[in-house]
Amino acid sequence: MSYPPRTDPQTGEVLFPKRRNQRFANPANRRAFHNQELLKQWDLRKRTRDFLEKNCRILQQHLGTHSTTQVSIEVLQAQGFDSEYLTRITVADGRTRYYLYDLYYIAISKTTLQIFHPDASVSDPRRTP
Image (tube, rainbow, N blue to C red; front, side):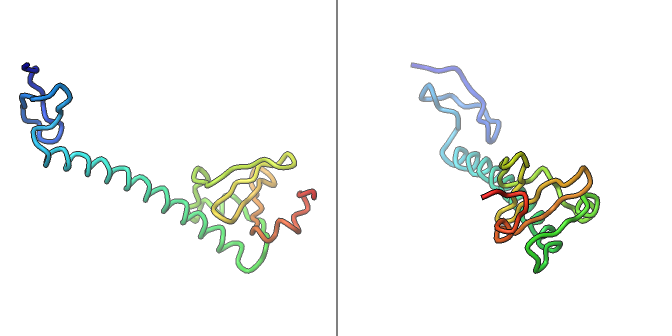
């Protein structure tokens, strides 16, 4: 049985498939195509991880050795903080907590955030037992 000619997505060459589901002219083209797709996914994950780590470093710099601190959103943004990159969001006691790995912050006002280290959750006045 003969199948209609197709274009190889890797090289753009015309191929005459031997099977109905054949997409590539040869196995080398198939491997190269899938390796490129995996590389794109890996790059996206790496960029996301880099943003998360940068945000975490910025919060840790402001936290220092303290268990909690307050900081202006403008100050964080001036340092490159991007609030779109988080690891988790929870709501407890009517307050939304935004997590970056082991740190979290809450909005005190529209312009101020309070940053907490997980050990600070015991002394967090907004947390009820």
